[in-house]
Length: 628
Image (cartoon, rainbow, N blue to C red; front, side, top):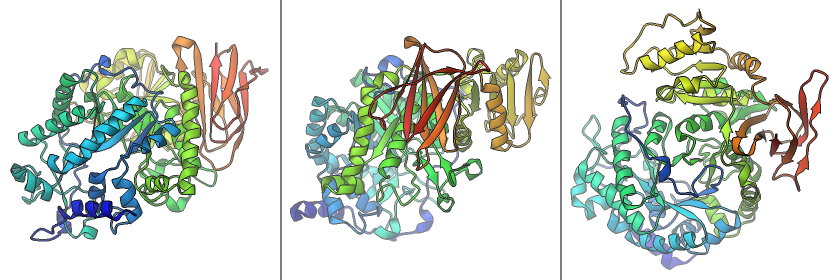
């Protein structure tokens, strides 16, 4: 351990580690992640497709969170994070020195072509200047080696002691709670630290907004490709919407292909309408979980029992976000929740990490590798477990890069649609449907059109309480034209202004050529899935596989191909997976990072007339390419 660097790090932390008068009060800690209370009736136009640089498209991004530097170490210390409080000298040293040019080799070794770096996380611009000067050189070298770089910034976080000292006017910037006290950031272990070290800024304060714009300019001056905002905690979606509109206009006026993304959570996913790149840390480590380790999981009533445990996946989350990416915005998801321990202290196993990467790529999503803390320290010190995990990541990323043409320019051919409202409630239910191998798309209620509806044989409205009068009319007409609509619970019980409405008369009725099925409660998921599967089976390839195998199907219209992605969430290989095809194909090829080479597959026609393929073994991930 180099004591000189460690001493500098502690001096940085100590400058803001002064216990304030009044000490620590647990009762004042709030997290502003509750349900949105203010939603816009009309959204402003977001970025245009042309704003996206040529390199930034789904299927071509291999990403890593590349948090580090002196301000990241100081943030972790002042937040009481694992391995930072009490401080682990090895973790501190690796974090503080992370933006050494030699760590770029780690990125190149595993085929990563996009990262974010810790550019501004809540300290004053004066305190963050040295870190940012170092990042100028780091970003330039990343670009020279073909790696694109986003600047991670906090949109609301303030390390208030440092801010108040260096920016006196910032005394007026914190958000104030109902008791007249500053609102703390809600995900820090203040009891460890001994006091509340982080406040949340008031997004409506013009001076704070001006400070955010200055930070954007600093990031662009340093050469960043764009800005990724974290800490988007507010109950006022309209306020957050206004900030993102302002920031995008500011950034794009200074850089033509400026990328803007925000780490949104479920109640604020819809703010992605105002970004041109998307990210969230709401994913969960995929796999088969032991029943004893489900306590962190939401929506346990929707989980599928499989392989002696319960299947955990993110396919429903991916589909919900895909509805907001408009077919062109890059979509990045971090699996922040773990079956065991915390992500900072316990990296995924190589197998789970490969499954996470393949699961994401199967849905056109870039998996956000979490490298900070334990994994970063292990890579810095060449620890065997970290090196083995890095090799496993390289194996899959190199496969994705080699076969990039199969992951880009894809289009869903799901025969079913599920409608959500702007609260995005129901993601856990969507994951449950995906676990049962239902192929569906998500459409947000405000985006529904007659043109979109006509592509689906069935539409389900299960958790969308707020549906506009216009959208309700479109759904009624869909039924009249022969569609099957499934409605449950309080769906459509509110109009676009949040006012209660009586249950529409066509709910639970046959109408025209179609019917609307209504139930007061969401049906048991196995029953709901079986009904959907029966109606969809001839609309897309259909698999018969052991529990624990999940699939997705997409088309590539330009190349006349259909791609079937197969994922095995269990710990043992799955065997004899049968795929029934809805049409004839000229050739079929099985590819996998788990196989030495491509394998031609025979398409057999059964006595029933069904074209069928059998995949003998599935280790973790395989891709079946069907060419017409």
